[in-house]
Length: 278
View (tube, rainbow, N blue to C red):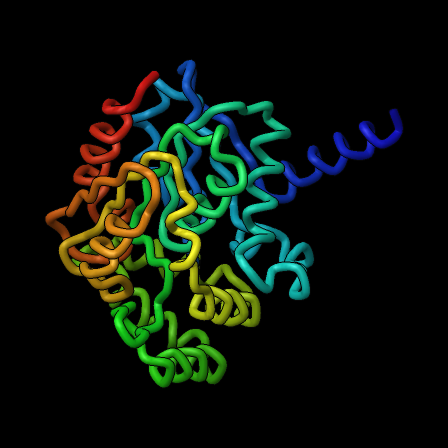
């Protein structure tokens, strides 16, 4: 009995720490999980379109600037597995037994790992700007050479503010000043040492070997031009994910379409969710 009580307290505390919210009145559950450098506010322009038909679960990754940085454990969050633990703990605490999962960037990979661990929990994965490995390899084009990554990390370490001012417009890609401002705001909210640590974790991740273990249907959403993820990565995911996988190419630029082109993204999300078994 005491063990159950402690578990419930820990779950409740996690929901509080990660600013978990459940909004909307539908029967089906939709989880929105943000990527590096943002927080759940990144979904603000997408969320209203799904609140009628779904119960929408939003939360912040522990590395987000909206979370008290004292909760970021540098020993624990060395791989993506700890982020998967958090996601599954949230869903269990909310008594979610089936859901649709939308993950952006690193959260796409978190969703993949969660679906491998608990396949019955996920009806479909919608993966935006996903990459199983950002570094190039012999027969794989991830978009970055090791030396380029080292330069990025050195720039972050030397002058975080200058790095953000250069990186935000590159990542947004499209000429959407409001999106650049919003992405800059959430990047600046992150503590620089946490931002650097998470960047290294993401760049060092390689999930290519586990993609075939996914049995859940997937939709890979890729923009026409993304400085972080080459178009070839979407084709790689389609070829190697074990579940039935389709690719949607958005006719826009940038790594953050939910900030820069929410209307285009909403259309794709609606289509992906409408094609699912209820």
